[in-house]
Structure formats: structure tokens, C-alpha cells
Length: 101
Image (cartoon, rainbow, N blue to C red; front, side, top):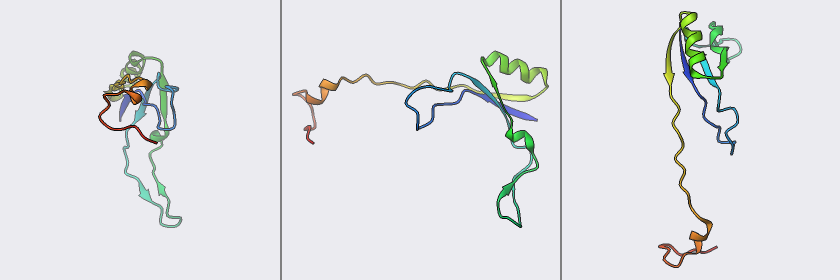
């Protein structure tokens, strides 16, 4: 039984950082998925894939995994690089490309 511990990134539909401060422990797929011959949808016998455990800190998630004898890997989050640009730079005289509508 193995799992990954990560902090989710914000979705493309978000402008804020809601739901990105918690750490998630998610189990890896143990049994491959298969296509149901009757209905055609994808199914799996592994119910642990459906479980996502939320923790406030990375240390709590690691302690839980160690206590339950779960092999885990930690995926550290990448911090966003913000480029500070002023709105007035759009109208700068030395601008390389002309600003038009």
C-alpha cells in the first residue's frame, strides 16, 4: 500500500488560493482499472483510490502514514513566481511594441 502526500495547487477557475493550504494524503492505484463490458464505464475493485485524507500540516500527514505503515512520497509545492508589472507601463514612451486597441 503506497500513497502520495501533496498540497493541491489552485485550479484554473480560481483567482484566489482557497483550498490550497491543506495537505492531502491520497492512495495510489493498486489494481488497474477496467472497462465494464455491459455498460462501458470504467470500474475498479480498489476502493482506497476514493479516499483523500486532509491534514493541516505535512508533519501530521507523515505521522499518520508512519503510524499506519503506509509507504508514502511527498510532493512539495512549487511557489508561483509573480512578476510585478505596473499598469502605467502599457503607456510608456519607450515601449517596444505599440499599444493599440
